[in-house]
Image (cartoon, rainbow, N blue to C red):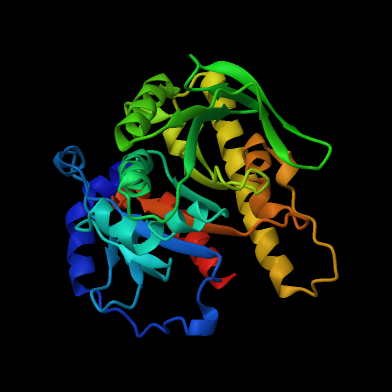
Length: 364
């Protein structure tokens, strides 16, 4: 299929140029994502390497500020010229290849900082296919978060503590303690505890970013078809914000999560047995995450008195994110999801799945 697409790249471009987008119903205010979750989609630029190999762009945000993204793919037929199949999505706030990380931060992430500063829980995670720019996006946002925490514009005095760790399958490793393993357990009150992890007090942007750099160097990675240094684990930065004058009050928490990339069948064709097992674990944990988010959305639509089953205990990732999914959780939470998209016409299957996921979150 890949060779078929490369052989017909010129036809793909010609048909895309002729494409006339249909009128798309935009979301009304009542159809937009709920106030506690913000959904954004970032389409990364196509790389020079991809262009040199004959790949072309297949994902196009519309220029009318409607938030609609058109995706084009050629359909293989037995006879005649391959036709163009086009799909349209509304995957939240859309950022094109020309938008900088600073723009994404100001639009959909910055509000999480004062929210956590005031004692609540904020969560950011980037989701998408391997090679779609998740780590680049999260690391850029992490730098901006660090600056905002220590730039002096937030009111009041706080103590800031940082822990950074990775989840690989059912195992958890402390990235600020030479990847030492630790346990994720629930205490007698049902609160998730990171047992054995090291937490560091930070007093400046430079200190926080130095810890981030140290953690990134220890993160598990391996070459894939899509990326020579693909992240093979979920990396989590937890920033805990404590009020020194209110010892009894719960501190705010900010989670910055770079999810491992989902992989399609063609991406894992040449994997070893060990890598296939690793990929299954990654895809399974991402599937549980989807089920949990969908479960929360369904619960909000039902009668609040009826119990809903949300399978957050089925993966280590969702155990850590228990605050988002447990119906009995009392803490106020806000979440920002950044869905990252590879624009190449060789990756339309994965891009469609990512945008469907983002669209589902918006309509929940």
